[in-house]
Amino acid sequence: MGRLSAIWRFTSQGYVSVVLLAGLGIAVGYLVFFYVYPHKPKIGVIDIPFTVIVDRSAATIISYLEYARQDDSIKAVVIKLNTPGGAAASSERLFYETRKLREEKPVVIIMGDLVASGGFMMSMGANYLYAKPSSLVGNVGVIISFPGPLISPPPQENIVITGPLKLFGGDRRQWFTMADEMKRAFGGIVAMERGDRLKLSQEELLTGRIWSGIESKNLGLIDELGADTDAYEKAASLAGISNYELVNINMHVLRKANETLRWAFDPLLLDFQNLESQPKTTADAVLQPEGFFGVDGSPIVPSNTEALRNILPYGGVGEGQAEALPGFPLKVNHPNIYYLYVGPTQ
Image 1 (cartoon, rainbow, N blue to C red):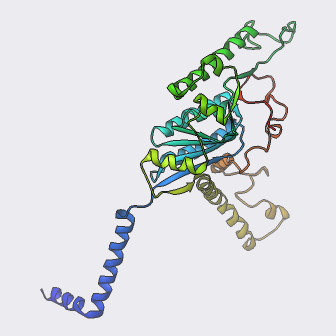
Image 2: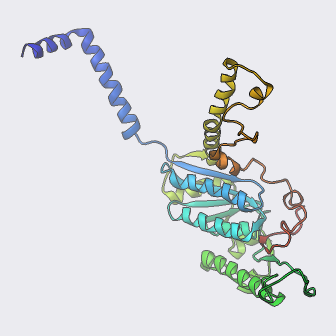
């Protein structure tokens, strides 16, 4: 009891009471601000500049979609999309990943100058589509460049094959059949996602034609004509939020990559700094600090920098299709399958 009385007398003193009350007020304020006071809801913005869809660019875009999906503070997503499409498998992957994000939070796409072929397939995964009046939209179809000449060359003595189609994977008729199957699968995705809004028959849709934004709106390929702000408002409406703030998802993913870069290379910088306190017997000791070069002199790159390879710089892969696809097709002696618009870009 004596100890309790002493503690009570101590805390009853004026200056001690003020300090304790101030500390209690700070603690309560912290709890209220971070756990009770509602923060502004966020709309994530993903900016995809002119980008041909290939494995690497698709991986970057998917990292943006994953960030938006995993961040609970982001209630809806707006994607600014500008692409002629690209590799078939990568385009299909983006469609499925966009639809996966749509299952958890609203996704609105605002189309730029061109959203064609594989880019249009990706947009089918969103809840709502905006375009500009002058946007170019559509180009539903597939391009296949298959290996081998139309007339098979005579067999060579130094090549042994186990079947007549082993070299080329099929004859011309089979590749045409495969292209038709992929084309109709693409058309089926558009028909399924657009539903009653689509005013085109499958035959008209699958001609591979490209339409202006105005035509696309009238034909049900998109939902509305509008600007970025319209897309933000629509995303907020679909999410049932107001008084929202915008989050640049590109920058957040880039910041995480920079943190990975610093984490990966800080030990190397430390090694260089430690060189100043180490005896330098040979020039090699300076040029090859421990942890940076292997015994054989080859450089050692930290494995966790792999994530940095998927950073999509602003501006995409080039200003025009000529820079994006020099010497189309991209690969030789390999079946190339594209959902890609290769028409005029001017």
